[in-house]
Image (cartoon, rainbow, N blue to C red):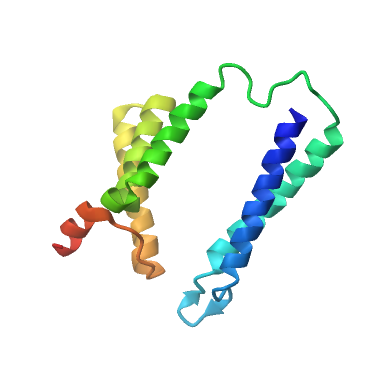
Length: 157
């Protein structure tokens, strides 16, 4: 188990440092129009780097435990239920957009994993993307991928 944790932490540190480097190509300071375009990616990558460093140190201090598997038996199914729909949404982001794709993913996750009632699923999966739309599109003035359906619905294109 220790080897898996160490490799995962090292992979996270490497990926986060790459993101920090890419974010630093953009302004990360506060501008007259709000946070610079590199602000959120930079601080998210810094947070991931710190958490990965904590995982790395904890795994290193834990010593060798070869008898424990990195992923216990039976844990692959919940991981697959979360991972494969996420990959599908990312693959279809051009068609669905981030808001509709996020709403579908959230609805599926709440219903299949959380086993919430349909009324709760409908309210949350509509309200959360709507709030995110208002925050990014209206407040931050950051256009996000809307997909073909939302582009047609909002702008008639």
